[in-house]
Length: 243
Image 1 (tube, rainbow, N blue to C red):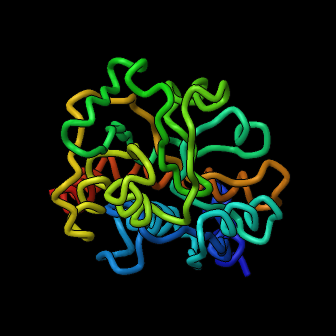
Image 2: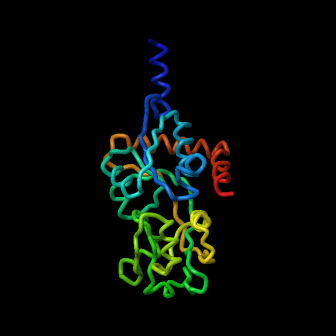
Image 3: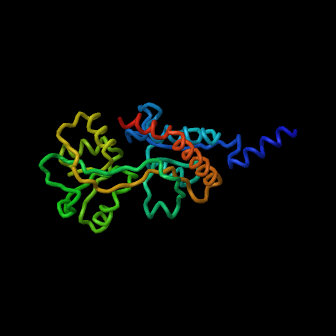
């Protein structure tokens, strides 16, 4: 009995119980960050798995379409979801982990389109392909709100590649790794990445504020993430997925 009590006190000191199990959801078609077909499910999936393991927490991972996963996390059917950008709308309802990774967004369009992320006037009246459930780059959000920039919202980035190829959208915006992975998967040599960045943003594990496990999940992840960075494992994981 004394040994069991001592173990429980030790677990409590680290903020995580040996019985903590978190059911978390993510989605596909977001290379190199999340996709069932990628090694370890992608970079952010491996980081989430490893960080929670560092905190001695058990992870049960589900895969759902992005919009469904977010809605079911909002309804507390999942303890959390990842990887998500911060938006004012989401911050009203969700708690955010420490950043999993920082991305730099780029504009992808047909060569000769003269669209330049550094000159927003070149985007006026154009149509962006923005997958359902994705948040627009911060500098483009006012243009979408005012109607200066039109949008189409298909289910995934692969469809955006096809829409730009077919002229049904003028461009899409995502980070360089995911954008180039999408082009490679589609064999799309008629779309190129712009030289200017649209902006940078951070990816997070998020949990609904009212969730019974939300604080425990994010604490466990944040502690584990810090341990991965201290040991050098975080850098190794990132390099493996972005080389």
